[in-house]
Length: 257
Image (cartoon, rainbow, N blue to C red; front, side):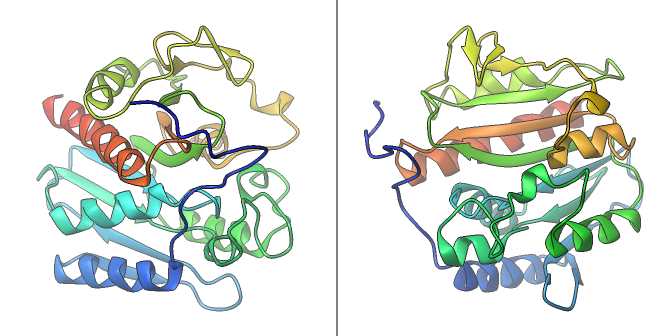
């Protein structure tokens, strides 16, 4: 499998009709007895909860923070439809944090703000609404942020793990490699990488802009965070397969602990 060579200077691949996808997400979640949290107003977004009566782990999953990364919401849709979750894990899912970006087929929101750089200064109404919702939720043991990278040669991930919990990166990469090429470059996004895993130095106060994953760890909202990056220059079904496999690997690893 090789890149398509479409993405020249930006994402040029498949798009999705986000309102239709959001309707399908809602139907799948409610049909499988998830609870819905709906924020009102101009920054409206929807989140879902599935609470275990005896949880050993709490896991948070987000997608769709960039409007030119359609694989994330579609991966969440498949996971909700398949409805195969560890019984002793409570889950929180935000399937699309930037619906306006998808309507415009661009990374940023309607005001031109990159939401995934706004978690420190909180300029966007979407991020403020998301943070208000997060403040009402318990702390998570693991967060999984679903993304794509239009420049990537293959799948890769970031793992932030300041608490030195059991690492997940290599296990996730092993599972993803069965369905999608992995970027084995020694340097990815100007950071050292090993077999598709980047473990950045965790110095949040040195970062002028915070992505969602950094905020979650810096504010002790999660003990471990993986940002999953599917390669946008491969067919959309392959990217969805990669993200689903990555989430499944993380859930399987959690279930084994």
